[in-house]
Structure formats: C-alpha cells, structure tokens
Image (cartoon, rainbow, N blue to C red; front, side):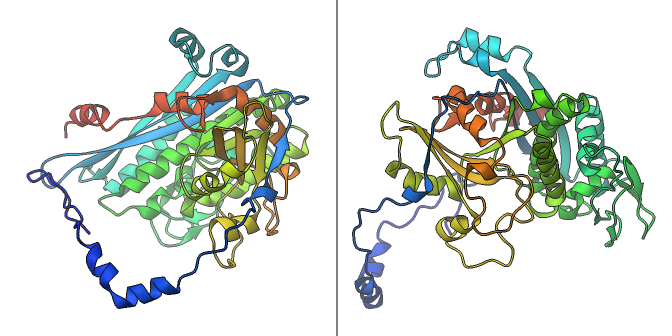
Length: 445
C-alpha cells in the first residue's frame, strides 16, 4: 500500500516504474503464464438468449413520475479530540411526464426546466453527531437515537414517521392489527417481539427500557456508546429515501385512490434493497406490492443502479444485442436468480437464494437505443426462491408500462441517465466544496 498525502506533505507515494521487471524475470511466473490457455474464438454473442424486443406502440406510458435521492456530508473539526457531524439531505421530485415530453432531451431549455421544477420538490434534512459531541445528561448513542426519532416525527410534519408506522404495522391490510417486526433492544442484548399496533414507542419486556419505533430500523446496532461511524449517516439517508418514496404510495392509498397510484412511476436512485439489520421492512414491502397487485392496482416502482457488478456486466454484453441502430425496438433482459449467481457473481450454490432477505426488486437490463442502457430493479411482489425465477416480464410488476415510459424520461446529459433522478440529485446533493466547508463553519467545527 502506498503512503498517502497528508496536511504537510501532500504528495502520495507512487508505484515503481520498474516493479514489473522481477515479475517477468521469474521462471515460476513464466512457467505459469505459458500453461495458461485462452478460449477458442467464437461467434456466439454472450447473453443473446436473454434479450427480448419490446414494442411500446399499444402501451400507455405512465403520466406522473416521482424520484427520490439523497446525500450526506460528514464534517470534522481540526482540533483534538476531533469532533464530527454528518449532515444528511434527501429530496423527492415530482415531474409531469406530459410536460417533460415538450422539452428537448438533448438540448433542454433552462427556462422550460425551471418551469418543470417549480414547486415540485420536497426536501428534508437533519444532522447526526458522530464523534465527541454530546448533550448534557445523555451519551452520543442515545442522542443519535433521539435525533433519528425526532427527525422522522418533525420534518415535513411527520410524513416519514407516519409512513414508517404504515409499513411496520401493514396498515394497508384493513381489519388486521399487526405488531411491528421484532428487533434488538437498544438497552440490553435481548430481542423485543415487536411494538403493539400503531405504537410510537414502548418498553422492553426484558429490561424495561424505553424503545422507539425508529429503533426497530436498527441504527443503534452499529453505534458505540460515544461515537458512531459514517455508515450510520449513510444508512439513515438510504432509509429516509425509501420511506419518502413510500410516503407517495401511502398518500394515494389513504385517499382510496389506488387507480391514480397505478398511473405513477416511482424511481429510487439505487437498487430496491435493504441490507443487514435494515432489512426488517423488506417482507412488509413485498407484502404491500403483492397486495396491491392482487387488487388489480399495480405499483410501478423501479430502482436504477449506476455502478456495481450488474452495471459492469451490462457493459460487457450490451454491444452484442439490439438495438444497434436508431429507430430499432428497445430490448430488455430479466435476470433469474440462477443467471445472477452463475453469470454475474460467478459463485457456487448459496445456502440462501439471491436476495432472499434483502431485495424487494429483481434485476432487469434495458437497452433503449444504441447508446442508452441501464440496470433496473423491478418488484415482483412476494419472493420466489426458484433459481429460474423471474423468467420474464409477466413475473415483474408493471414492466410493460415502465418500459413504455422510460424513453420519455431519458437524459442525454449522462450515460444511461433519467431526468427525474438527475433533477432529484441536483436538489439533494451536498458537495465536498463548497457545501462541506460552509457546513463546517455553520456547525462551528
């Protein structure tokens, strides 16, 4: 590992320009290289069997598009011991697709973009103390717990907190009074069986300590008594994005307007998954999506992945598939669990099927034109552990209308970009400069 630049000596140690000489002179390495064989050239196109042409002619695009994005910016003082805070911001952007149709995708006029964004963004922000910042009478651990609870309950008039309750207690199932998912007590090492229906808080039946519904999410499981890692801020941002997006679903559902909800496209920046201790809500989310599908009111939801192994895999195979000329039909590929394991992860059989506990969406590769492709997560509803599931678009919720909408919301500003996500990022992003410097002064660090 090279030495990194510091405050006094800023240069980073570079790799030796002659380091390869001993490698190529090694008889052992040369012997191994001589034994390696390359596969015989083939005319087979990798992944060709995956792709299916899509004709949007008879399919109605979705009219309303909402996208969510977030960012966080940790700032640290220069003194010792260093004090550290993390500022977190999320944004939900609403776009009328019909209004977007009137804007040139390649050269959008700034005035038209400003009109498109007028009064269309809902923003939320908070700050979490990470290290060496306290409030008299409480530890950093319990201070973060309290701030998370208050941020959910106060920001946007408690919009996110009510959505957390809606998901935790499965309130879309009228007549049922479900308890929340079970979770680890923040005061003792025992598990709580769940809070009673509609409760904001409760007590641990083992130690008697007060617990909040927000503790069910599990932020406290990666915090120490006196400090928290940056990953807590990242997890808060991701959870807040998810709850903000599902607040839209709750809004229509509580009004009994499921038909309008079925004409909305909801977009999340990143995969449709919650990992680790944050996955407790995944089963409830799957149940909601399956329940709505069963009522004949599908919820059109996607997550777009901008980086990672699925994006890398798409880059390897996209050049072999249609469309290869402007005007050709778009193509899509639904990835089964078996394909993900064998061709993307190149892994052996797993004890648990892919995404069993974490994903509420399955992977779909999309190529809209010769220069625009993307990786999406699309829900299926209930999880199916079959290795060959999903097998096609009929397993995905609303994939036809989603694919019919995508060409109308493409942005040519970035590779494989969507206008709603780009706009949400513009509203929510916190830069390293000047945002970090301004926030550091604002916090008095």
